[in-house]
Length: 285
Ligand code: PRT
Ligand code: ZN
Image (cartoon, rainbow, N blue to C red; front, top):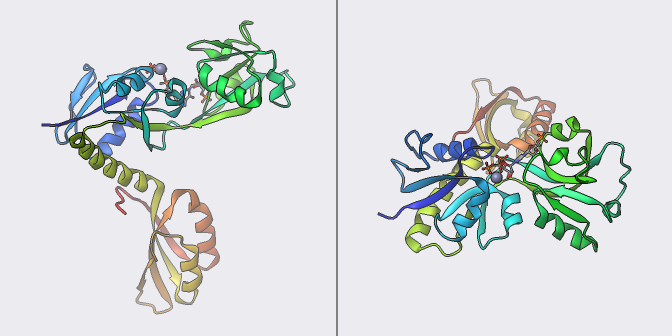
């Protein structure tokens, strides 16, 4: 039987969230902790656990068909693989940072400077567009200590909360790129494997939709219905149900997580009461 082979980071920032996504897609697999390879019990999927840096190569060589990895790694390695889906977790940015006492106003500050990073290719391309490339020294970890030990004048590193920079007396001055976990695929998958991939992507999309949206229920004065319906940017027109008291109606709709608080403010303005917000488990559009 044909199987789709996926590579997932063995341990690190992407591991748990990647496995959680598969589980939310209804895919079961036995306890994997001691293994490097595992098979799902209810879906034609084989899972390989690898270091994230190795995943692009494995996908390019079709040792695995697809993988989950940070976009930053895809761009740095520039292998012949396709990004087929953004997954919305492990969001971060690659940023240039300098010591707190540096007066860095614009990118020309970096002319003739030495920058430590684990992302030399991305950084060189970024500066080529500016018309110059500073000296770039590649280090594989603990980049943030480079300025304090005299290894470099500045760094380019991944930032999420900003805490690491703060603790090391550094300040973020320019963003080089934004990144998040993505699914990558070999560009030449066999039709039988592609068919399984389509099924997986359909499930992933349903999970991602549900994460981005909330189900909302509320009571509204019947006379305010037109305003309230306008304030609800749902997927379709909301469901409106009459209540025992004809002056009131019940409304059900779906609201994007990102619009959520603004929508609630609008609804309250038009007299909505008893607003219930419920997480959605799956959402097939
Ligand atoms: O062992 P393996 O090679 O598999 O793992 P790894 O150590 O290379 O990678 P890992 O697990 O650290 O990161 C995997 C991926 O997570 C990265 O390629 C990014 O796509 C993504 N990601 C998201 C991050 C961060 N956020 C992040 N904050 N990767 C690293 N960091 C580091 C950063 O380098 C810095 O040291 O966290 C520190 C900064 O965090 P804040 O919160 O203090 O700003
Ligand atoms: Zn790595």
